[in-house]
Length: 159
Picture (cartoon, rainbow, N blue to C red):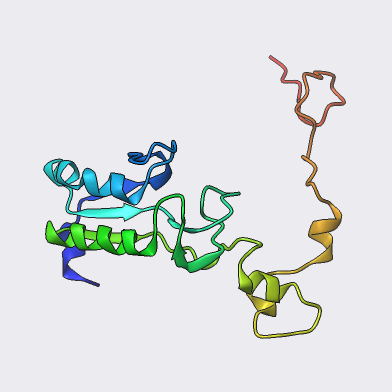
């Protein structure tokens, strides 16, 4: 393990809700760059950045469509590289939250895995008929206000 991790004090950033510098209502890489001195003043020497890769954002960016492309809503790959350079100029570190086991349905791995013919991506995902035949999943009991003894969610407790 890298020695700097022994004394790392992380500041976690979800880019979407960080500083927006272009007025589109979404935080961006430039906004993070503009606040690096403040983050360092807080005593942090490392940044943990939540996923910032290209994504349809069905799951807050964790549904990655392309691990080689920065999410355009945050900036370009060049902007991300500039962020890294600015972090390092301040003797800080940055880690990107990489989630290779959680991709978007738009990711090429997933698209290949969907094919009927077996291929190198087939086993990257778990395919089963039983899960999808019960979609959407049904709760074990109804969470209605039904308080009758027959309701599976409620149990009468004797005092």
